Amino acid sequence: MSTLLEKHIVELLQERNDKAISLLYEHYGDTLLGVAFKVVRDEELAQDVLQESFVKIWKKSDSYDSTKAKLFTWLFRITRNTAIDKLRSINTKTDKEIQIDVSDVYNLGVSSIKPEFMDVKQNLDKIETKYQVVLDALFFQGMTQQEASDELDIPLGTIKSRLKIGLRELKKIYGNSMLLLPFIIDMIN
Image 1 (cartoon, rainbow, N blue to C red):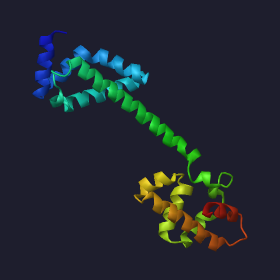
Image 2 (cartoon, rainbow, N blue to C red; image 1 turned 90 degrees about the vertical axis):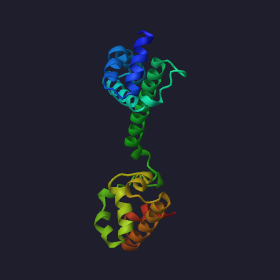
Image 3 (cartoon, helix red, strand yellow; image 1 turned 180 degrees about the vertical axis):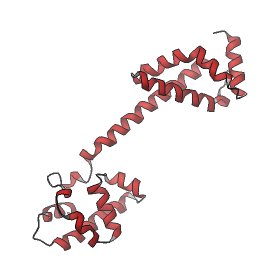
């Protein structure tokens, strides 16, 4: 691509002229798609990355400085970084989906007891609402303590305290005679 065309594209970008995107796509689209594909290794995902990259290029067009980098270098970096971010985002989402197996709640000694098979849910209404909400989120909605904190907009320390107190309250309801006792003792101690 000629330097004259690069300058023209940069001018159009800085003027916020839609034609700049068309020219960018026409002259750089395939190459940038290749950059995205090399990172994400999936054609459909690479297309998404390319689209997101063009949006970022459009939004950041005023930050391009021809004295610091050639146009292609700037486009390349935006596309590559967008692809890396997309990959991280997918990996984070996958980690969160799997996280229930390594949840703090289930690491506290409850792996062999499944609350949904006991009558705990029916007795939740006998304890204060603030404890009900936390226990429901952790045991019946399958959230981790951190997810419950984020979802309920309650500090993590408060989630842990309400879990402990809520379980003590359930222990009072069930007494020492039921299956839940070892579960409660493990959770409180």
